[in-house]
Amino acid sequence: MRRTVLVMIVLCALVISAPVALANDSAVGTQGAAVRPLTDTDIRMDSEAVQIICMRGYALYRIDFKFVNGSGADKALKIGFPFPDFENEEGNRGVPPAAFRAWLNGQELAVTQEPGFDSDGDAEWPVIWFTREAVFPPGESMMTVTYLGTPDVSVMSAELAEALSQAGSEASGAGFYPYLVHTGAGWAGTIGKTVVRYTMAEDFDGEQVDLVMETEAGYEWTEPGRARLLRAFTKPAPNVYEWVYEDYEPTRDHDPLLAFAWFSEWTQEFDPFEATKASSHLELGEYTYQPYAIRDGQPSTAWAEDADGPGIGEWVDIGFGESRDVREIRVLPGYQKRADLFAKYNRPKTLKVDFSDGTGVELPLADEMGLQVFTVRAKADSARVTIVDVYPGTNERDETYISEVTFSEAPLPKLATFEAVTGIAPPAAFEEPAALAQLTDLSGSLPDPGKPAQSEEETAEAQPTGAGTKPYLGALIAVGLLATAAVIVVGVRRGAK
Ligand SMILES: [Ca+2]
Ligand SMILES: [Ca+2]
Image (cartoon, rainbow, N blue to C red; front, top):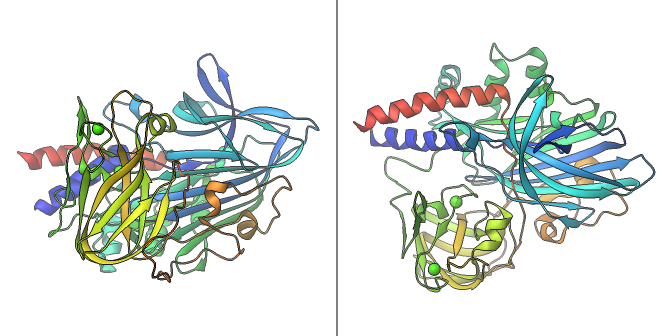
């Protein structure tokens, strides 16, 4: 019973806060105070490579858009990704993509968040746009975007629960990583080629993708065209799902979706909230930065220390609930929710990790938003993470934040190059963003499905990776999630009496 209530609380929190999908870039403009999508007839989206590495709790997104500016002259544009403005809806708070970064031909662009509207025909709805100003030279350019996103998680439909039960699965809910290609429809002409590739890391907290995808496609309310395209994936490797479209005008039916049976970290025996303790944590009115936020799978939530000064020596103990052969530590240092918050507060410069097996390692961190990965070797059931040194923030209050630390038994699969994903040469002016080069397999092969760590060394270099997410739900999923949220809230309240 306790487990049921806990899982419901987790689902409740996720359902209310999780809607995070990513969408294609649009050209946008400001009308009055609001940002709205525009149509651009000079620039074509020639091709795009969408890579989504799904791991425990969240996913790393990298998207490379190859654009062709046919105007014959420089063209300045504001580009935007929309995500739902759930903070405008009573009782709901959206989780925007975290660590959102963008580059044009390898040069990083400043990213801001602006309220506005997205639209489809005559309908429009409030969204937050991640915008950046870019000048497209004549001819080919590459826009690269990264962010970290969390899955949409909901209770299972009766059909899915039955199918999973027959398959022997004990999933906690249904999980979804949607990607919206249809928002790329405003560019000139058709899109020449789109590849959307989902790669599941060894510690991905989902399974039964084939079964759940088939159930999604089989619902009576799913349009035939949508059902056909949902089934149109290939599996280049057992842990890779890929959609490929060529020379097409994107519609909502094309929007890929990775659907899976989702597992909560909570079990009958293990309560991760109770298994996470800190020397101190910050509380600011309604905002609290509890120890659990360092391992809750949400890149946009963080633990913050509450000691005098920058918190040197402050620590968090993270229990795994099991003995784990730890081969990799993934760190999101600082407050990665937004770039301005990341700069405002202290970021750890050095962390010390002491495992319960008596081994320890120091992690030197780059002062960059995004995922940083370290190779280690330990066999432990818990670890203490201690702040050794920090990069100072600009805030008067002296607080150090850590958004996420994950201990994994296998290395993260690598990202692939644009050319390896699409078979299309990148623009001559394109340079691999330095922050992504270390997470990308430059050999041109398929993503590494996650082989065991080869290195016996205790530390590896930091590998900064930007990532963010663009949350936006397909209308069908959004309706289902919101309806589900109401039901679950009632259920938890009743259960609490
Ligand atoms: Ca977190
Ligand atoms: Ca402090």
